[in-house]
Image (cartoon, rainbow, N blue to C red; front, side, top):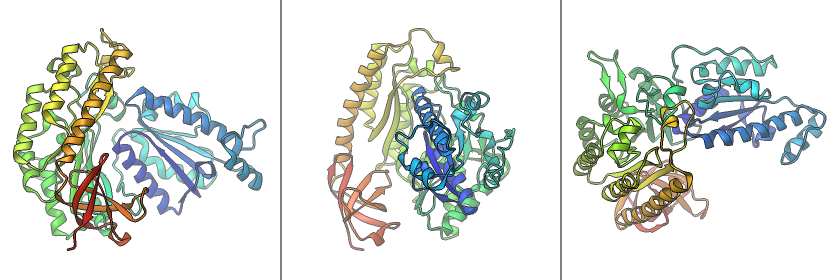
Length: 465
């Protein structure tokens, strides 16, 4: 049987899709060449912004029509579904199972299936461990089984993607921070940390598969806590130290460790020292600031100030000279004044981020910010956003240009789409580098001299060992 994934949203969703895919592969399923030919469609959804949900509603409309066509229903339309129409013409009606999972599934758990009856399963955040029962029911052509959520979140054994040299390793789930604009705590629930023993077991699995780089994932990795692994508990810094030591002890193929997302309020001096001294932890850090005004940060319930954030940045840069910082910036939060906006501008100019994910505030139903007074009009939000995007493009060019002429360690991972004679790889700072090299180099670390910058991609030359 065949499957097809559509995954939206964050890295956690990518990891969770990969874990379900591993289950399907273990049962002999294969990935469909096209969604229209698949036996099962799995849509992993995002609720962080309303635009993400709007897009998913559009996809549900498409798949509702596809299901009618696959079932051979009278009047089913075939526009934009010519592949499925030809498939049905050759094979007759072929059942299609539609599964919706992820944050939107959790948020609309009781209503999504009523509004979209073509959906066979709505799998909330706490029901992913039921996929074995779902798959078995599909294989046996049974009526959809009842899915009930468990009271405790269950981590998958592995989130490995077949053939990948880089992979995600979820270490915690949920969030206790309740930023006033964010829906994540309501759809992901409270923080749950994955036991150290489970994390190390997954690292053992990944090592046997030749993985070279892992990214530890959580809504807020800094607040990780395993109370049972050792007396007094294990925090995030200790977890990183344990993982790094374990990698060395088992002579793992894994060389690089990354992590995200991290909240500035929980970024300790101990963690900074470990990053500065541990050879496995990469020097590219994503630390979301969200805003440059202490007044707005307080309204967002971020629980740090502009001053404390800048102090953190100063510590990081002084202890880790080759550091590259990236961030998230939100413009147009309710009550944001022109002065508040200028504080964002000045913070970005001072920090000099290598890149930033920039967006304007979008109200989410059920969050405190959606009910706040002084909502900013769309024209102002877009104008402010465009200004910082233009500014960040200049900063990115300046910061990256300063790297030209350096020799860097690169993990070669794919053949370039633009030039089949070139490979693409990434640096410790998570920058992309294109260079000429044999396909046999894919999955290995090479030293590359950075010759030039083309857009946001370095051009380089491999140095002989």
